[in-house]
Structure formats: structure tokens, C-alpha cells
Image (cartoon, rainbow, N blue to C red; front, side, top):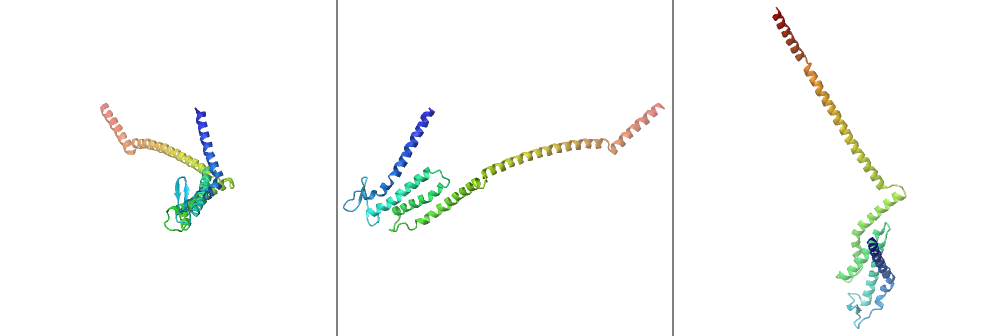
Length: 220
């Protein structure tokens, strides 16, 4: 059963990697695909049964050239991001967002200007991605170059903190035992002081004296 699951996962992985390799290999041809598409007498292109116009560009050929110059780098960047194992791969999000915003501007912008204000849309992404990658870079540099392992230091501090709590508990238990001993000693000493106080001794002596006097009177 386990071997079947492993084979299924391996088959799926190989299939996905084959697709990646295929689209990477044909990327130069996809970039020039607009030169090989059929065009009607109005200059519109026929793509898989759909008719594509110029969409505000001087002609459909220019429009398709612009699309392919954005689509091909975009999906190559996405493949790179999904397959990269380098520590800095998050920075690839910035060019991915750049190409995506440029295509978005072409499809949904109302004016005929392109590649104008979309650079400002990248600022929030850059503000999040760049500090994150820089922090990872600092962490790796400190660990592998300076020999500073923050995780090990944090684990050591946590262990010391736990030991501190244990010592605190021990101190509290010792304090409680000492307080109990002091309370017990105070109780015993209080009883002794009560029994052997001056008033009690005088009262005892008087009782003894009265008993002796009464005994003597009976004897006489």
C-alpha cells in the first residue's frame, strides 16, 4: 500500500515537472506566436475560435506582441518562484507583481496609456517583501558567517528561564517549610510562656500554700 502511494506521488511529481519543462522549452515560440496567427481582413486575430481586436493599440499585432512580452516572463517567474529552494526566492514576487499589474492595466484601464502608474502599485508589495528577505539574509549571515544561532540562543534562554522558575518554586517550598517550622516553634514557645508565666506560677504557689495550710490545720 505504501509503495503504491509513493509511486502515485512520484508519477504526479514527474508529470508536473514535465509540464514545467515543456512550457519553459516553448517559451521562445510562445513569445513569437503572434507572427504565426491567422488574421482576418480587419486585422483581427483568430485564436482558438476567438477573435482578438487591437484593444486600443495601433493594431492587433502590436497588442499581441505586448501581451506575449508580459505573459511569457510572468509564467517563467511563477515557475521559478514555485520551484526555487533558495532563501531569497520571496523577492521573485516583485517582478511577478510587476508583470501582473502591467497586464491588469492593459485589460482594465480606461485610458490608452500603458506602463505608467502601475509602478506605484508595487510599493506595498516591496515594503513587505524586501524587509522579509533582508531579515532572512541577516539571520543566515549571523548563523553561518558570524556563528550566531538565534534559535539556539532562544532555546538556551528558554531553558534558563524554566530553570529559574524551578528554582523559584524550590525557594518558595523552602520558605514555606521554614515558615511552618517557625510557626510550630512559635506555638511551642507560646505554650511554654503561657504555662510558665509569672501569673501562673504565682497562682500555682498560692494553691500549694493553701493546701499545705489546710493540711496543717487538719493535723492540729
